[in-house]
Amino acid sequence: MVASAEVLLRRAGADICVIGEGEQPMVDICRRAETTRNPTEFRDIGGLALLDDEDRLLITGFVPQLPADQLYDIDWADLEATADINWYFASVTENPGKCENFLSDPRSEALVQANKRVGTLVSSRGCVARCTFCHRLQKGIRYVPVDILISRVIEVMEKYNVGFLRFTDENFGTDKRWLTELCEKIKPLGVLWSVGGMRVNCVDPHYIQMMKDSGCVAIIYGMESGSQRILDVMEKKTTVEENMNAMKWTTEAGLWTVVQLIMGMPGETRETVRETAEFAAYALTLSRQSRPGALSINYAQALPGTPLYEFGRKTGRIDGTPEGEEHYLLRISDRDAYDTTTSINFTDAPRIEWESWRPYINLRVALAYVKKFGREHYLRQILYAGHEAKMAEIGFFNDPKRMMDREIANTRMAEPPPLLTLLRQGKFGLAQACYPVFSWRLRGLQWAVIFLRLVKAWGPRRALSEAVAYGGYLIKSQGWRFRFGYRSLRKIVDKELPPLPTDDPAMEPMRKGR
Image (cartoon, rainbow, N blue to C red; front, side, top):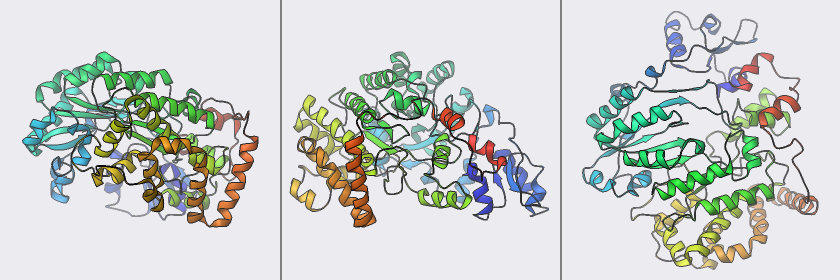
């Protein structure tokens, strides 16, 4: 949010914004606040954005980054005194849906019997990449020294009976010496652990097996797309082949994973979506044990301080004034990026086409799964969701996985409801999931489902306008190409799109990120 510091200071009533890393600036603010509450008297503190005496925006620069051995040094006693510590260290038996990846591993049975809890630690800060949809106000990446990290693991194991551990880094294990040392030292502890963010170009069969042998049960990657052109726009610095290899090696090792995608980046077309659909179909049919619903698809959501946000502002999709930015930020606040009603279409395709891409990928995956393993096995996998316990919608993964967990797994149905019943209830996504072959044959009518949804959300007049735009698109879409060319969106924003005349030059460091 502080990448929109001007909005917060001028529109939201904030006095001070802390930019970059906040640990030291926040301490400095608290000490200064003992003697004054006048925001302008904080201007000598580094790492802040505020308004000066003449109402001009002032950025006081970035403070030095913390050394790695000081990152995430949590005093759990503070949380015990001020919060319910069970929220941070949850019971696996009481929250099976939140521990799906752990419970899928046979090694978990003994730990469950011992009533072990699940905890979360972070082992690094930052990332080696600068994806154009991702906010970044820090430089580089720092890994907590392994000995310090292991001491923290032992602390939560002994103090809170933790037997399952999540590492929720943005970029886990890029440093192979660090990763090797961690695996050597965590293995004797007997804890099962998962990785919430690893790059596909940082793994191979050797390292995946090494992680598994030391207790790892799941690796989740940010693959984002199966189209090389869109990966280039995202500046992922990865390839489709690396995405495919990571899924193949992880599946062969028997580790839990999910395909995570982002749809609707600038330049996305029906053709790039088809490429992504073929990748997802390959990735989720590598094994009979793969779940066809292990697919999470977000729509591109522009966050302040990213090239995607600046693309939205400079192309008029986001109003570039402070008032317009405030309106946009309120619109997406507390909204998951799967929500098409609040997401912005950053492509040149009409909204009906844009909304059809997620169900198309879902159907293509389901069809491939049915063709390879049969309808009976497909239904068994989606109806039972991998284990007997009820699933909990945790909000981390989005549709179709979210819908599968909520609508299917929790009902524990033995057979799918009749197709007409689902259609009568308006559960079109569930109907497609339960009857994929029939739905695939009728995929040309997907626009009608979306049109009805738009009528309900926006009213008939606006929905009809979208239908007319869709019809025109079908006539003219042949041979369409992204006018900016398939290269990093950062370069497009910096070189092809001029600054807005209303922009405050002081905001440039915030808008560009680091």
